[in-house]
Length: 346
Picture 1 (cartoon, helix red, strand yellow):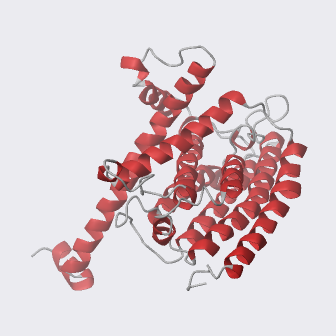
Picture 2: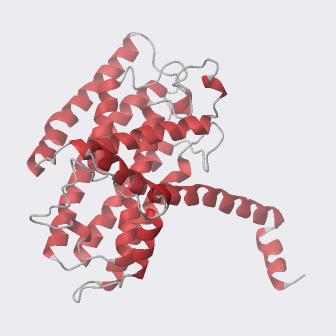
Picture 3: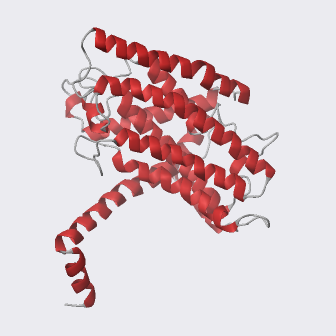
């Protein structure tokens, strides 16, 4: 027995090593398909917007343009990484890593099926909310470390936007939790066996989707980018793979928020109706179909909706969404108490 085997058996134990290998394989089973999905979401976005605008979009590189994401990745990897002279080098490098890593670790609690989840913790909603809130740090650090006024103003815009809409998102989530009585994501899905929450909580579903657009800095709320005043916003000084990490993080966040929307309002892996032949389709496939539908709405909105002004964005978040979602929480709690429908765990 060599030193490595002795060390592994004495410190970790054979069962611990096996458990560690299984966990690593599960992580890879989530991360690798996610990265591929991010790559092809960029292609899908350009194709969908192209079709809506009566043009073809990418269609030259490979059959039907399917190799375009790989061409883009090769182009970014071959470019030179340029660092501004007055930049804080450590923070400049670490900022895109923070954004990208946070977009990945949130998937640890996302249930793809009833028993297909990496970590089925009882506070899954709180974990997701905390991770999405930390994404602000990557944006602020990137804008400040660049030593550029354009980048810093873009970072302030983005941070204010993300923080503003997290308030309404939190209240919307509370409305769902009142109906479930649990912070566990699997329990939230199972509570929708009779009816998806998108039906009784339709206004909250619409508001949550709009808030996710603002949270992920997507059109019509892509205000950190302003061609006339801020160029590309907080990542204007980035190039090569550091820019690619921001790019990957943004699209990974889109997929994450789509998955979160599906879990909260569209029944997760549950079929629309528990009837033949819909109940023969695997739950994982239903989950993927619903996530793709929400992602299509992201692309549809970008192709058809003009950009808001920043004052309109703030007014919508603070003067409309915040009071309406707060009133809806009170109405939901009152309705459930009046008809004795509160879950036992509340």
